[in-house]
Image (cartoon, rainbow, N blue to C red; front, top):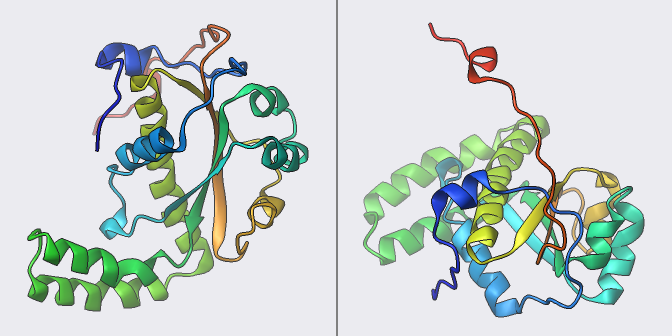
Length: 212
């Protein structure tokens, strides 16, 4: 993994991030760099390492045109961004459990005995989740990956905008995914900013924190 970071200033990456809605339409991000950023973003943690996040990178004019009617009031991002990244949660992510844990064994990060013990406990546990419980798990884990992607993108010199305003019931089928298996989590626009973004306010920590 060759990191193409042009910004290693943590303070600027984390605290200088703003939601950008207008991008330089002439800037395109290569698929190689996009995959690199996704790889870096998915070092984020997930529950029992099931990695339920799935990415669809909408980058062609044809695909963006198909997406446009589904994103309500977020069309400027779609029209000008280098890409729109659709993030889904895989409701059957546990089907990859053996593959994930066996790779850990092969890389010397886990013994075969521990793998077998953990999978024997984890897989039935996941299979017994209700649809609502599984939905919560995959959305929480995939949101962690989304946040890390936004920070990684800034390290690569790009900006993003997390988007929740879209037709959730139609998004999976629009990109040829099984809507019963893949639940939409959010959309991220990404590209080179053509605006500074705006300052926003946050609650004081004392307002949102309790010590017991």
